[in-house]
Amino acid sequence: MRTPHPLPERIPLFPLPGALLLPRARLPLQIFEPRYLQMLEDTLKSGHRMIGMIQPHEDGLAGVGCAGRVVAFSETDNNRMLIQLRAVSRFRLIEAEEGFQPYLTGRADWSGFGIDLGGTETDPEFQRGPFLERLKRFMEERELSTDWENASAAETETLINSLSMLLPLDVEEKQALLEAPTLAERRALLDGLIEYALRSGEHEERLQ
Image (tube, rainbow, N blue to C red; front, side, top):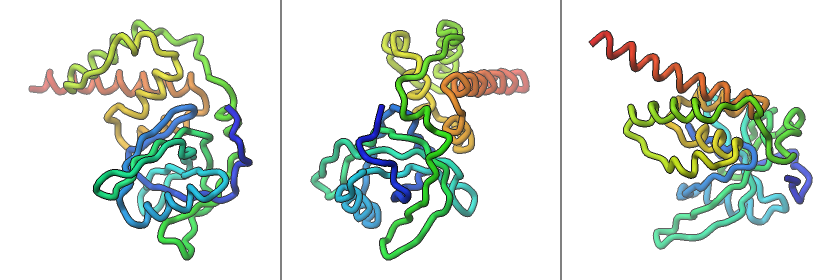
């Protein structure tokens, strides 16, 4: 995928704990705070129409985020905006800046994430059957549901990135998934997190 505009040096930042955007994925958001409504208005006037999704970290922001282009938006009856971001590329945050606008902007370093601007990634070593079995146990323990037919048929990248975005994982774990350099490394990390959660659950059962 190629972005139709050069990657900007500065982008508006939307810090949101647990909200993850990954390469070639889409993220729906509901915006209602006045400062972020202003951010959206300014973004739609820009040439790139990009917003940097980034997670808060301690007293600041995480070092890596992912920028998405606003590809759809609509207004609700209660003056909220529903938008959809399509991922463009991850970025390394050089510096968060405060200006005259009520929201943060950030200086972005796009180097090192060229893989995000290419085509769909593959993972030849992915063993879908065993992975889905572990995922099913993980979701049953947490009383979660999914469309297993679509999960079985989805492209590897779509499956792994969607699960990384949607599963109830800690903020730190989601950040680690975002920073995984390749799809194969993200899949291995996600699989490890699922397996660790399953083993922790079994250990808790034995202690009861």
